[in-house]
Length: 415
Image 1: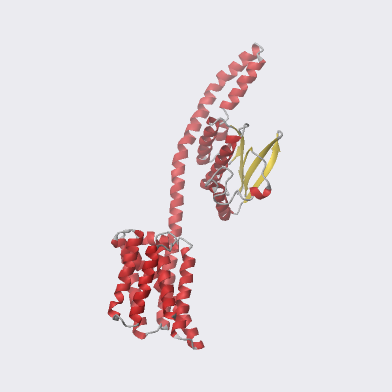
Image 2: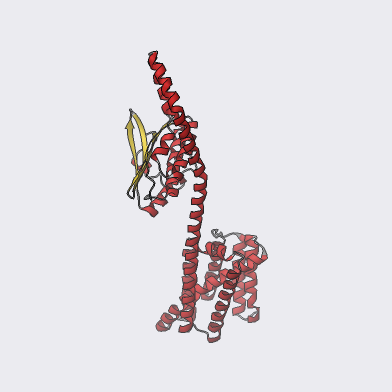
């Protein structure tokens, strides 16, 4: 009876492992259940010597067929990922086995009890690892068609095969072999984690370059507009003098308001000295104004290293402004205020908009994934800011304010 239980645990571990490699959650569908039942039955036949031990390879063939049919991958990919999952599960099995055998020998536990404890530990470890993207990252890393990776994978298979041969030959895990296994596994894990970190850094740098190229064009356009406005300034002053001479105060006021509105975006150039950020704000402000929304802003950002990287500042401001614009779709008073101040490794980003009144308990839900007052699956943006909070340790402040006898909601990031 115990044999069937630990066989079942081992096969379930493999099923979870292969699903995690493909980045999906395991499902107890008919294919998985049938495969598990066949594998357990086959192992029972081997144990009772109904079939010879030479037929053991059939277990691996069945596993490869399961991967091939279940995930609809090419046969070559199915073989590769099946071997990868068996190596990974086997390494965990070997790492857990030695301490279990030592404790088992000391407690005089039966072989079946010790194997059950090992496979239970393996299943628990696989379940915990499957909650991360580690195995999926390993698969993507090894799936690259590079010579060095192919050689590394072959080396891993060789060392794994050697360890398994030693264990089968001596029917136990020797201390020196255990040291090799643990050291080897630790090195592999460290390399993979470092690779994942480097890949994340590379992706981040590529995004920075992409944004820099994109918003540099906007910044150049802003500079050209500023030059044009300066060129037109003399004519505008003469027009104001003309209106003053004929005492057309009403027309003069309208003309001044028109000039202020037209020159609003130019203020970005003089108050934000970070070209990429200025280019982004120029585009964003123009988009908001084109949507018929009045936006006021108060900005002061020097050309220096910011407490929050420019790329992440852009993401925070973009999320706040996008949410404000969407929230105003049902409001008659379509007004937004953007404030951003930075100095000496300190920064404040604040966006306010006209809003219904929200209680504190509902405000607290705004930063949860998939929660939104605006519709299904639209509450992801603010949750991303919550993720950035872990990176920069900034404070997030959300408050209701009364401005000109109207309710406003204010979102702030302060570091």
